[in-house]
Amino acid sequence: MLRVGKIEYLNTVPVYYGFIKGKVPSERIEFIDDVPSELNRLLREGLLDVSVISSYEYVANQERYLLLPDFSISAKKRVISVLFLSTVPIHQLHRKDVWLTRSSMTSKELLKYILREVYGVEPNFHYYSLKDSDLPANPKALLAIGDDALKLLHFKRYPFVYDLAEEWYNITGLPFVFALWAVRRESYGEKKDEVEEFYRRLLKSREIGESSYDEICREYSKGLKLSEGLCRKYLETLKFHLGEEELKALETFSRKVGKEFKPQFIET
Image 1 (cartoon, helix red, strand yellow):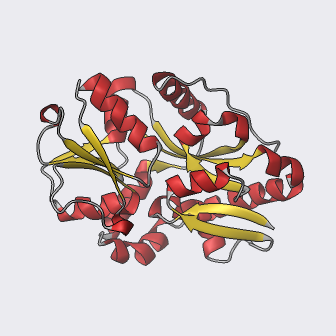
Image 2 (cartoon, helix red, strand yellow):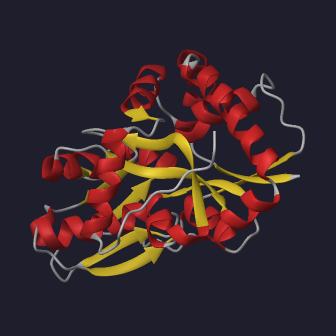
């Protein structure tokens, strides 16, 4: 049995849609749904074999993992679902309280870099989880990701909204890679055939998902309080592939956070 991590956000539905709809077989696969930071931990600790993980998790622990070729969650110019929301402009947040979601690893590191290096701001960081209800009633500024960010955007509670993919693009001219699909090296050694079969199925599942945006948005938009049109616009901002430009972006991000990027992939 292959243990596979799956983020419980809309932004991975197109990749897993073939599995979700039963059009791609899932026998001998156990899917585990959770937030990105928890999937990072489960894969790192060997409780999963394969998972979508934060790109920062891969960059920081490359010796543990191999990448599945041509899979990522990336965005160029805007992503809509990785947002820094504030009641005041960023430059007024120096030494002020800023809340970061515990669900994210990559977005947290990206935001810290942008605040420090671009805006010269060093806030007081605190951490929250919406599931644990430990966010203050009226935070001055917060980082939100995934479906939580989409919901906060809908309520228009914050006058200053910074899209982190857009901020990154303005600095580098590159897309930003938020997540990758990886396998533990030990799992690949022990379950090579199963991992490669899962990779082939995942390719087919993504193919189905990328041609089903209208159907996906009909199914998921209401629960997120989004119009079907905005849902489709959101999915179209995302890229689920990993090409040369995305690899260059990963190398650039790695360098900016003091890491070396040397990607290694499974056989295909």
